[in-house]
Length: 176
Image: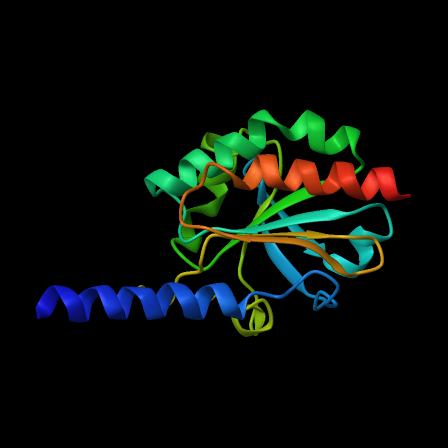
């Protein structure tokens, strides 16, 4: 009985998360965040960045956790491909934000900035991690220059986010 209840609860959490993401074609809410790149303080405003090209916005649960380290390293290893497609990559989290300066150098290889989530972003981007209050889901958005969501990927596994983002950016480039 307990296993059935646990499985049903887990299914509801996954279903709720999958249904909550912003969908392709929806407008990406604008935001300004503060964080770090290469250990140095930086800030970022989505609307300003979009004037230069598309943005890959990936949310990760918390700095210095195994999956988040793997995801950040994967984005860092592929940063040249993102830049060749004219895209900026940024990571955003609500977990362990006091350690982002170190995370930006150790696991992001100083290749892209990571930011502490801004007020309202969890709701605006629907990335509240239900299983761990105060942390964000692992969700990646590709946002076109017109502020529209081009791709959404929500998965606990950190390993498909880069490939799917690059594919979305290639499709976006081919359509232009």
